[in-house]
Image (cartoon, rainbow, N blue to C red):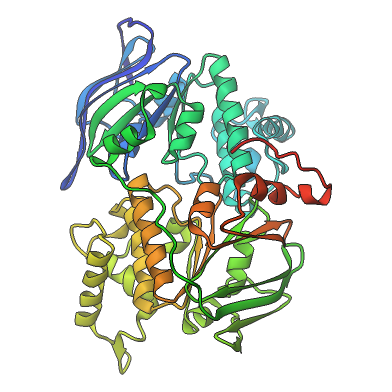
Length: 514
């Protein structure tokens, strides 16, 4: 990395004419972009708009094909990740980049461990200082815990602790709240405001527009690789931002729920896994969307895993269409017509190095085969059918899934369960990392699934999503369902009240607006 002296005004970073092309895709098209010292600057746009490419260039992960970058008054040449870190640029990527076999403390100080006698890692100091950073970001676990044992939200806190521990001038946060609850989001905002007070610049990427209005000073909109607009947040309405992002106006985000649920499709009784979930009982009717809400760690995903056979339970009963069924593995769940879209689609949802076609047909190979031989023509026809139905943006059904945007990857997983004709579809954070346009498409798809008489169980940390989509909401706290709310009576305050366990104390004080 080389640096040329050239003092500039109040800009910490100025990118001019940034262009980046991948095979068949112009990811960034002569983008001009500026970050001021001490500001919180939001970057928004649909999946595939160029946001990730831009921040990877700013972080030295990618090199632009054309354009210049000036940082702290100096022109930067041949930037790489190590050089970016030396300049004071710290990035929290959307996809976790932690080393899972290592402890939280080791991940926080990876590559810059405190040492004794120059050659030996000072582990006592390592754990002590890591714990201080974890405490600062609100983590409630020990620094020596293996990262693989942490939940997705806890891993995100490790990444946040690592970022703020680097004494950075610029912190880039790419979808930092995708696995956070409303209360955890507000704690993150406190950290961002604290960084701002110290003169640190934050580049904040999020699909949740409410967060942009809560935390950002200015916002830049990207669309199809171009910088469409940069403006003060208070000068841009949400409708205007959406129009800039998608190139058109959107009707209301959440579709109207008009169907009447039918007879009981699925019921679970006394689902229990010691130390995880306790005495969980509920039912879902045909054509109904039921939400599981609660703080991260409340047991929502554990319930989903138990129903799908991905977690062994100590006791409990599952009844499907009036008959008791034994589901002790995902294979058994699929055989009974239960589908599951997990929260971490890249880790558990899609096979990244396989094609769109192969991912769609994965759960239906038996139905697409005859005498144990896969009918390739039928597999191809079905994949094309659902590509068109769900409007999956891909050059071909033979495209590798890792090359698709997050929203289109999620549609591929939906297509898998539609092809299988799942009776019950469990969705764990179905719109994580997805732009507002793709979210709307997912919501309408959920509505159509329910209208067809299937049942949907949705887990979401986004309260507006739960309120906008669910017929009933089951609130969990410490592994139990503690309250049920109808669509008509549910509010954000009521969900937070029960999620935080405040019903146990009798206090009606809600822990902050969401």
